[in-house]
Image (tube, rainbow over all chains, first blue to last red):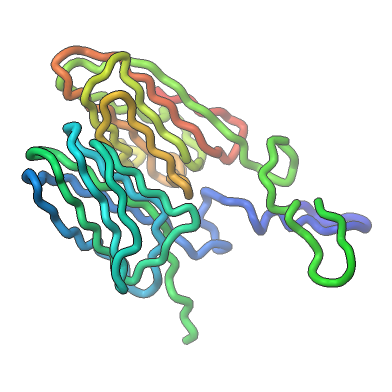
Length: 134
Length: 147
């Protein structure tokens, strides 16, 4: 942070920058979830993503991709139901520009094509622990 | 910056804007790493930033083969002794594979005892040249070289 000298507006820029150093200024941690699996033709699977307790998890990115060019669908559910879903051939990217907080997170993957030997699901976000009042 | 008029909270939006100027306000600079290499048929190659690695954030990743071919692109975390720690993401592709992380992937660098490794798995039965591109923010002006 730039030390104030003389008069004029103070420099508050350090308060808003994104840092790769996990210093005490930020209590958030990045979280990642990956899973590789197969899926038969015209079937689906519900994947319950394990979330860390003691805070809330905010997810920003979901990537679903397949090893073959089949029609697949990615549906994201939180504790109160469906958040959103998206279909695509081989690749489905689902970004949440402002993030979305999950207390529970279930992802449904549907295969509308022939058997897929390898599907890859990736998710990324931030975990913020609940502040302790003790 | 919007000129203040009347009463109410002032507009401090200018404080939060991204700048292309390497001014003292930020100690971070943008980087782009690019590398092209041959990945033999039905095999994989892993890349990482060798030597002393400064902390950085990776926002955009892409892998493009020289011809359409089925491949898997993975981002993994290793410790400074190059022991596997965890897989952060994976994605299948054919023409290209792109991953845009809205909040970035954090790497503390070798000082923080971790290194990002970018793995390309060529599932085609012929060799292919793959171009890997990585961009983001780095904590200093030392540059970013993938090897």
